[in-house]
Length: 59
Image (cartoon, rainbow, N blue to C red):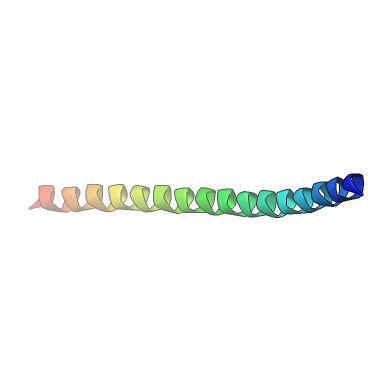
């Protein structure tokens, strides 16, 4: 009976590990997407700042 309990526990833990691994992968993907958005936003701000500086320099 103890062997059956251990087998069931291993099966349960493997299923839980799969679930947690899937969630981790989704979160890593979300972090990657957010980093990309941040980089694009920073690039846009740098571009806007340089254009603003050019406008001020023209005055």
